[in-house]
Length: 347
Image (cartoon, rainbow, N blue to C red; front, side):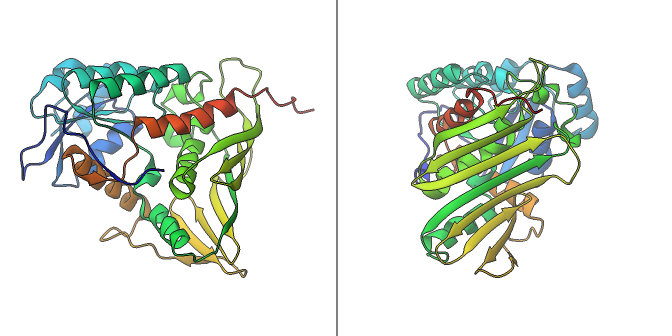
């Protein structure tokens, strides 16, 4: 994982000194609406306008966020001189289209992961953005989350000694989760699934912590419906010499689980439910209070830390957000896993 970078100054639009950064939001599903909600809490960012291909989504946004203008088209939104950053929060199959539309307008790009629905197209987009000189960043939650920063700091400080192994466990009783039920594409094999949507964040976290991540092997279990996403996946990774095991599944009884455990020579670090940190010296896990500023809720603290980094990126300042090339490294691991021969069907 590279160190925080200074964004290129090739974009034609920068926010005036002292003025909030203007964001144009494309995509008004769950994730796009979250951007509207979280940006409204800040003074350094302002959503100038938004758009979605679905008129019903636009109507809901008008009702729920009356202060946010709904644009007539994505091009008219990106043409607004008050917009400095384009946020692309659509399904992955449309990312490249809107990313290049924003780049053509001289905007900085903040895109959801994965970069695109297909790996070959993701390679193409990375090359196109580089050729255009478009400053870009991709939204991996662990880029700025205080809990992830805590893990990185404890690892650097040698608190657990040399890392020996990492275990990633994911389980979802229903996929998509209830709050994502309207996003039909998340249940589809071509661009959805929990491997792309959730495991990718933890592959990124491994890159952040260890500097590298390589797929060694694995297997995926698919349902009979050829259009539906995976039911389960197991994988082994090598991340900077640290062996990582992955077990992920959806469907069945029991509470959802999202657990990342790092075991070292002298102790262990853990994240549960994304942002709850704990440590062990060999005895029972002890919860760790991770500073979140004035935001005691770790999820909100993570969102706000990410938006602070976005504001820095938009001004060409030092930031810790990964760019499209780094997102491509994550996507290569994820798509490599999904392309492995299918696991034998359960008997």
